[in-house]
Length: 399
Ligand SMILES: Cc1cc2nc3c(=O)[nH]c(=O)nc-3n(C[C@H](O)[C@H](O)[C@H](O)COP(=O)(O)OP(=O)(O)OC[C@H]3O[C@@H](n4cnc5c(N)ncnc54)[C@H](O)[C@@H]3O)c2cc1C
Image 1 (cartoon, rainbow, N blue to C red):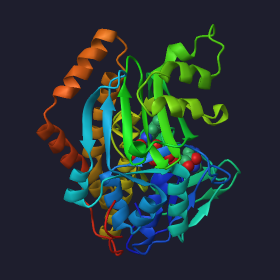
Image 2: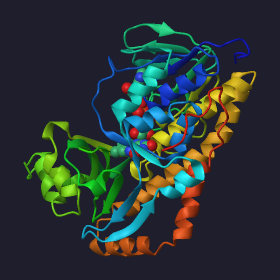
Image 3: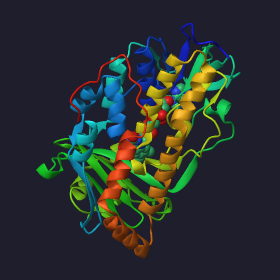
């Protein structure tokens, strides 16, 4: 185990949301991390993402929350609908704004990454796919291009299929859900009432919705039972399937489905990572999806990753050696992230119920959940992490 009192050489493997935020938090505490990212370049493509209050509070500590809000849309509220259009639950985000200074912001992922990259002085080396890590005490990281590095501290922020995780928690495999998710950004002129509101529709075996990214851009997602999409007797291309499936859903889903560019619809599986026994070994530590990838139903995966980032940087900064730093980080973060991962799985199971009777019972139950209970849950979600101060002052008035 290395002593980190002398400024350690820190390598962050994975330059996604968590890796870049970790590097930013470290750099603001005087470290000089290097990020190693597998992709050969950052490209302005991808889907949208919802940054919930807890994520924005971390970004506030890092001084970037205002930039993110300006690049995205600060949502006024959201609602869950039945496919008939009936509102099951409304979410008024003024509660979070008043209690914590931030509501929710929807933003293009590429804009989020661009802003993080722009704020960073750290070296971000692209085209560096880590293929192996050897020796947890004095790690050697080997990249696909044959090069190696020997950092004092190695942060594995390389996502759900993490290579770094093989050293910390060998033989752990992501768990697949029997469903897929479509994501796209549609250029569509939104009616006024949808320009600052998110929407969800809970159907039979489908969970769809999204949020505006601007007055004429909408980030849309929709799940479908896996086996339906793999039906070889259905030769229609996905966009047509989606228009048919969601065409009679409540507004603005049909107009969004109509505007989808078939070449810009991403289809992925839905997976999470089961609870790991540990998040660190020797001088190697995991963060973000590498440690706790979760199903997207709670909209918390990236938020938990950025909470990790701040907590990890704080622990490395305030403990004399990496072993006690990582123990403190894990004690702080693991119970919350594991709990939210489990909640997201339960929500996913309930949200994608296929039977008509089950879906109707669920929708009835959602409408009956007392508002006080929902508010308690939202308060715990927004504030449940400890937010160490950073040398940067908060970025302002909130979203
Ligand atoms: C459909 C869907 C919707 C979602 N919606 C939300 C939402 O609204 N709000 C929210 O908070 N979260 C959401 N999430 C979760 C969120 O996307 C993830 O939790 C988040 O992207 C994880 O960030 P990360 O940096 O840990 O991992 P990733 O985003 O996976 O980034 C990992 C990075 O590491 C790189 N990499 C991978 N392997 C290697 C390697 N071997 N060597 C070097 N680099 C490597 C990758 O190229 C990537 O850049 C959603 C997820 C899904 C699937």
